Amino acid sequence: MDFEFSEEQKMFREAVQGFVSTEIAPLVKEAENNEEFPVHLFSRMGELGYLCPGYPTEVGGGGLGKIGDCILVEEIGRLSCDGIAAGIMAHIGIGTLPIHYHGSETQKQKYLLPAIKGQKIGAFGLTEPNAGSDAAAIETTYKKEKQKYILNGNKIYISNGPICNFVNVAATMDKSKGHRGISMFIVDNDTPGFSWVKMHKFCDRATSTGQLFFDNCIVPGENLIGEEGKGFRYLMETLDGGRITHGARSLGSTEAVFDATLKFAQERVQFGQPVASFQSISFRLAHLATEIEAAKWLLYHTAWLYDQGKPCTKEAAMSKLFCSEVGQHASSEAMQIHGGAAILDDSVIHRYYRDCRLFTITEGTSEIQQLVIARQLGIR
Image (cartoon, rainbow, N blue to C red; front, side):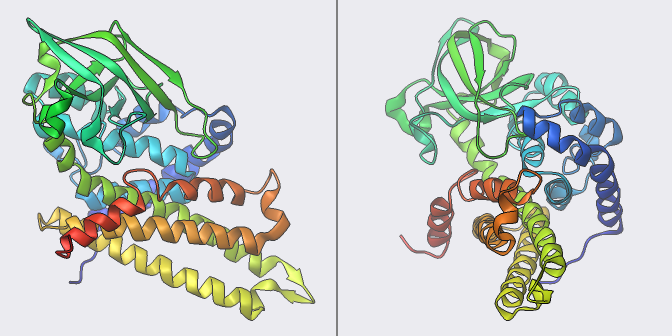
């Protein structure tokens, strides 16, 4: 089915492109070197109305739907770096969506609305040393005492963990119940018993990533999201949207690495002619351009389905799978075409190569996406 961006979405894309080019791109080198997300971007983007385009206008968002989220994340990845795109994506997605869907009015006023304005930073605590793809296997526990909950355990690989004001934490009361024992809680960063350590990564260095610890962490009863025992269902509700946005993140970086490689191939002269004119290089570039165009159409068609309220679990998994694997392929080809130039400190190609390698792992591995697609096809 055909679709096209609305005039409002087109205007938003143009505005975001200008903002990213002038206010985010100049921050990339320092953010990468320091392995720290430029935190002031949250308040700045919130002030301009760029931070949460997908949220409804009645809660302070842009009202541009999932397509708006994808435009934002794609352009940040394309014009700045994947690490910054990842930090924004975590905030506008799983860092706030559970509160939007299932939070109380008090929780929305205290956490969601300030987050949409960029006054608070959100994160999501699910992954653990022994629980990732198997989300129902989480070992962080909680117990209820009077009007409070006590959490114990730890989370790992948490985007925005070291910089968040609050984190949505998945914990289980009874591990033997599997997914039926999981609940979700909002934990403020200054809660006694909550601590974190910064994690150093070889990729997405501009994202602040941490391991979170809960040591008899006391959470007030009003910070339970929704109902006890329904946390896993709440998590599953965010997956389709998260996979689509992740596809946009992959697409943005893929476009960036392709543009840089095309320019290099047109300017690099060997044997008296640009290397782009050699058939072996031109065919590679042609193939990559085709893959990127296909990824773009799959992604935005899926985002359109999502915004129309149509079933898109299969398409969301396909988008995440295809966009991430095209990104990995493009970055590998870029390294080969650049040759020795790609390993120099002043080349961004090695950063693209590192960052794109992560695409097929985070937000559900390629293997998990293929499992979802197979099930949607009726294969058991």
